[in-house]
Amino acid sequence: MSKQLLIAQLDQAVTEILGNPDAMPSSVDASLVDLLQLAHDLRELPRPHFKARLRSELERKTSMSTKTVQFRQGFRTVTPYVVLPAAEAMVAFVKQAFGAEETLRHSSGPGFIHAEVRIGDSMIMIGGGPAYTGPARPSAIHIYVANSDEVYRRALAAGAVSTLEMTEDHGERFACIQDPFGNPWIIATHLGRHYIAEHHHTVTPFVYARGAAEFIDFMKQAFGAAELLRADLPDGTVKHAKVRIGDSVLATGEAGQLPALPTMLYLHVPDADAVYEQAIRAGAQSIHPPVDQPYGDRNGGVTDAWGNQWYIATPL
Image 1 (cartoon, rainbow, N blue to C red):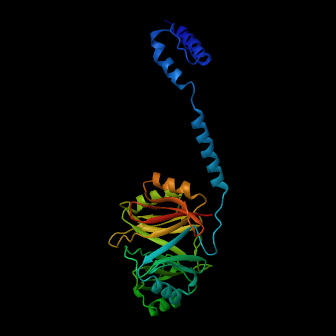
Image 2: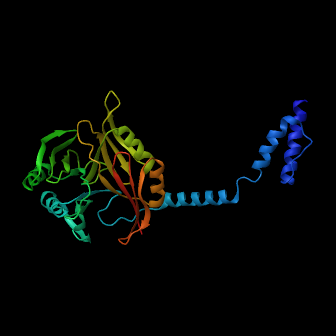
C-alpha cells in the first residue's frame, strides 16, 4: 500500500477515535493497528487529576520565586546549631571570647536548654545540657571580627587552645583555635575595605566532608546552592570551596586527615515543604517531615549522606 494511502487511513482513523472515543476503527491496514491503539490510550491525556496537580505545582513554584523569608533579627538563611552536654558552658565561652549576646534561652525539658546567641550580624544556636546523652554535634565556624589578634587572645583566655597561630594568607589575617567543647574556629579579619569579606556575614559554617565534590553537588540539588569559589587539587579533590545558599555562605573542603565532623544546620527557606522534598529527592534521609512548631516555625529535618543534619524551616 502506498505511503499516502496509509497516512490518509491513519488520519481518518484518528479523527474517528476523537469523535467516538469508545470505538476503534476496524477497516485499517494491519500495520496501523498498534499506532491506533496508542492513539486510543492517549486520547484523554492529560487527565484532569494530572492537570490539577500541574497547576498546583506551577502556582507553588511561582509563589516560592516571589516569597521572601521574614528573618528574626540576626538570623540568616544558614545558622549553625551546636548540640552538646555542656551547652551552658558553651554559651558562656562565646560570650567571653566573641562578645556574643544571648538573645533567647528556654528549657526544652529537665537538663536540656535551647539558647540563641548573636555574634555580629549572625546567630548561633546552642542546645543540649547535662541530660543530653546523644552524640555531640560540634561545628567548625569561620568568624569575621574587626581585630582578629585581640579576639584570638580572648578566646585563648576563655579556655580555647591554638591550632594555628596568627598568620596572613588568602587576603585575611587569621588564627585557628579549638574551644573546650571540640568546636574548631577560624578567627579572621579580612584585609580589605571591610573586615568582613564580600558575600559573607560574621559567621560562616565550615563543613569538612569526605567526598566534598559530591557534597557540593548535593547542596546544589537539595538547596539550590551556587558555587562562589572552588579550588581543586590535581586529582579533582576539593581543597577549599564556598557556596551560597540564600543569603549565606557555607565553606567546605575534603576532610583528608581531619575528622569529617558532621554538624547540624538550621536552614530558613521560603517553602519548607518544597525544600524538604527537594532534599529527599537529592538523596537525604528524613528525620521528620515538616510540621508547625510551637516556637513559630514550620520545619522538617533531613540527614545527608555525610551525617550532617539539616532542619529546614519557614517562619509561620
